[in-house]
Image (cartoon, rainbow, N blue to C red; front, top):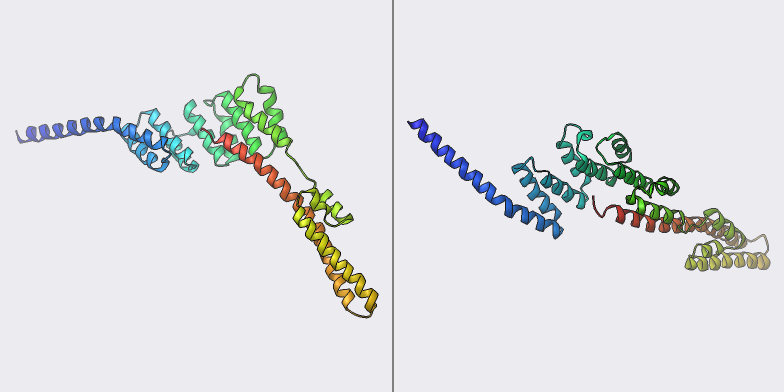
Length: 274
């Protein structure tokens, strides 16, 4: 009799807890959605971790959880959680395969993402092409990205940003470091004018010109026996060589700034949604 009474109370407690959990799920989901909308991704992830524990078969909750990590740029965590959804990532369904490919590429794991994209049978063909195109963009292989995506654009509209961004990368303004150095070899400062670095160009003209003038003046007034001319000559040579090297580096900085603008557009486009 005692056993039956204990069993009765245990079952009663179980059903009360279960009913309470079911009752809590709806407001918890609303709260988690609110956290995502307000971009409180850390808190949203905690809430969705709890919800996925309560409903382990609910794929929509799992997707929301992965999105929390992706939007918060915690790509490695997203990958770990996706790996927990299957014993092999290649067995993930289409939706989770897409999230897996996105997070691999977003974390710049290019070799791993390329392997997964090529081997996955569940990742949609259009998505495979999209991720391949963006892989080329991330690696600054704008010509390959353009040649790959342009012929496929008619059948895959997802490639439109790849075509546009690859064209922008190919047409990005570029200054030749070698030409900048040559120009400043001929006339000090002109290499920096070529790269748009007017302030440094003026400084180069003044320093090289002043040191050269003092060298000429010292030798003219004191002759070649006095050290003053040699001192100024050494300074002039140093400023002249520095002007050439500075022009070379100025062109490199110009190209880096130009490329950075393209990269910002690539990342802003790719990271909009997983």
